[in-house]
Image (tube, rainbow, N blue to C red; front, side, top):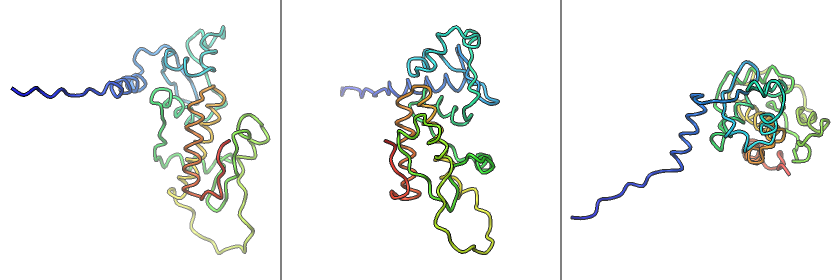
Amino acid sequence: MPPQRVEVFDYAGDQRRALGNLLKTGDYFDFVIICGQTRHKVHKAIICPRSDFFKAACGSGFKKAQAGEIELRDDDPFAVSMMIEYLYHQTYTIPYDAKLVPRYQRSSRAPFKPGTVPLKITRHSVGGNSSASQSLLHPLQTAAAPVPPPQEQPSHDSFVPYVNLYVHYKVYTLGEKCGITGLKALAAHNFETEGEKEFGSSSVNHFG
């Protein structure tokens, strides 16, 4: 009788699914991250070993931390959700969501718009220099040209790459703030890859 084939079990995949389900369901949560209108139910055993910021917050004597929650008032809510996704999944994915486009169109902080060239970014300019950070949020206009006749407003699809770059930039700054080295590296890679794809290597410099 020939030996039966032993099915190979995907142990790594099983662990990833288990962690993903913990984030999705919030089961057994022991800490809450609040940003905007969203309350993220998370687990100290997952977020603290990977983030100097959350490790310090959970071990501090702050009243909020003792109550099992922390509020990130000054951070972008969508970028925070991407950061938390990374802590559980080792990656983050920006969904195509038309609702994000008008939100960033309305924001005066939105850094990229069709017809503009994004500023070249270095790792040093993102790491805490307020003047440099502000400059990142305002793109360089392309060379002056005669005023064209009125055209239709750009579609949602035309704004998608600019929204993605904005999110990657905000995720990178969160990685810097929260001491998550892997998140910074991933956000920088995503920014560079998508920036080069959309604008060409001459328009977007690498982080660092």
